[in-house]
Length: 362
Ligand SMILES: Nc1ncnc2c1ncn2[C@@H]1O[C@H](COP(=O)(O)OP(=O)(O)OP(=O)(O)O)[C@@H](O)[C@H]1O
Image 1 (cartoon, rainbow, N blue to C red):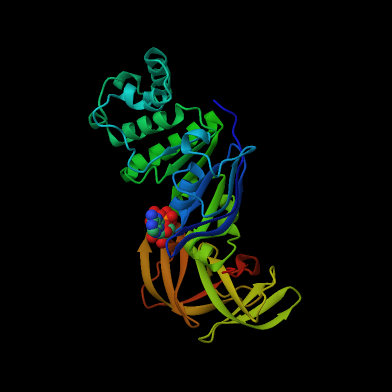
Image 2 (tube, protein in one colour):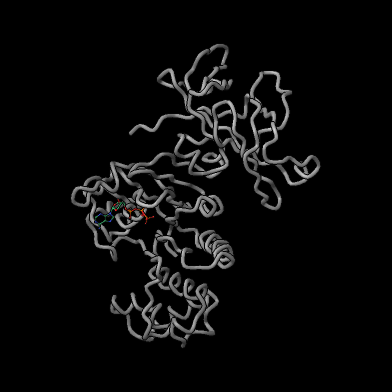
C-alpha cells in the first residue's frame, strides 16, 4: 500500500448557486489518521468529502494531498478512493469484475487485474464468493466488496460517505470494528462522513464537528467530549447540559452566572468570554444528588421524567429556570434509592465539572 499522506484543506469554500455549503474551512488531517467529519444534515460534510475526492469542484481555496495540490486534478489522479453510501456496485458483474473495474479503466491486462482483485477479496475474506453477483451477498458483505473496490487502486486516502448507514444496528457495530481494524492495518488516512456522534467517537483519531458550513471543533474524541469548544458541540455530542447566562461576579478564577429565570451557577473561570454573558456545559454523569458541595454549586428541582437505560438511568429535572436539566445515574445508585416523577431533588456538582464554552465565530 502507498504511504499515508497528510490532507491539507486550506480556506476551502463550496458555493452551489446561492447556497454556501462550505465556508472557508481550513483543516490539516495528518497522514494515517482516522478522521470523522461529524455534524447534522446539511452542514457541509459530504460537500467537503467530495471536494477532497474531486467529485465536486472547489469554489475557492486549495486541497493538498501530501506534497501535491490536487485542487484541479480529476478524481483518478488524486491518490484518493471513495466509498459511496449505496456502495454503487455493478449488479450484473461478479465480485472479481466489480473489484477489478477501476484497473480495467486504467487498461491493465485481464489476468493481472483479476489477480489483484482476488488479492483484495482475500483481504476482505470474500474469496469464497468471488463468482457471486452483489445481490447474492448480505449487506455487510456488499460493504466489504465496496471497500475492496475502493482499495484496489492503492489510495493514500480512503474517503467514506456514511459507509455504515445502510446496515442494521448489530451489523453497523460489527462493521465499525472492521473498518477501524482495516485502517490500522493499512495505515492510510481515512476520512469518514457520519452524523452519528457515537460512530465518530468509536472510530476517529480526529473528530471534525461541522455546523452550517463551518468547523466548530477539530480534536481527538476525548477532547471533543471533555472540552467541547462551543455550545453547539456540547449539544451535538450529547450528555451535556448547556446553560447560557449573565456573568454577575468574577474573581479568583471563579465566576457566578445568573440564568435568565433566576438560577445561579458558579463556574471555574477557565476561558475568557468576550462579553458579560457565558455558555456553560455540565456533564450529565458528573451531577450528584445532594447539597454537599462546598462551593454551593447546584439547585433543587422537580423530577419530570425518568428513563431506564440498562446500565444507567436518565433523570430530567426542572428548576432554577431550567426546563430539562438531565442527570445520568448508575443503575445501582438509582435502584438503591429509587426516585419518582414529581419528587423534589437537590443536585450538586464540582467546580471542575463546569466547562465554560467559547462562542461560535459566525
Ligand atoms: N448539488 C447541490 N446543489 C445545490 N445545493 C446543494 C448541492 N449539494 C448540496 N447542497 C446544499 O449544500 C448544503 C450542504 O450539503 P452537504 O450534502 O454537503 O451536507 P451534509 O452535511 O453532507 O448533509 P447530509 O448529512 O444530509 O448528507 C446543504 O444546504 C445542501 O442543500
